[in-house]
Image (cartoon, rainbow, N blue to C red):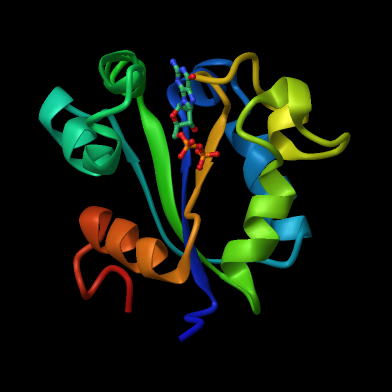
Length: 139
Ligand code: GDP
């Protein structure tokens, strides 16, 4: 069932490069509403927990180290068709392949330091939002 919600993180590269405000502006301009938001510097254990589904992938250790390299901004966003529309807004995983105007095309540097996360399904949007926000925070 579509929840009309997705989960995002503005990753350490984008926060460190001062793009947080610009990325939030792009998200709001695309019609998303912010339902919850927090600024947090992940511990290794917290990043490993979030990316547990990727634990068998060759780049898991690098990805975890990267996600702990500086603060991030995590948020739950709402819009009709949120998951699919947000994936379109952020563009391909590798910014070199991302379409013009997408967030990753504008603000990302590499396949790892790719500026933002966006959930890939309604189910994962719920799991990921629940990982970061308590029930009262995501009401
Ligand atoms: P996404 O759904 O577009 O975020 O992409 P994936 O689920 O495939 O990968 C999760 C995250 O792992 C990506 O957003 C990147 O930050 C990172 N990542 C993906 N592929 C690679 C890779 O080949 N090398 C490294 N170092 N990181 C990667």
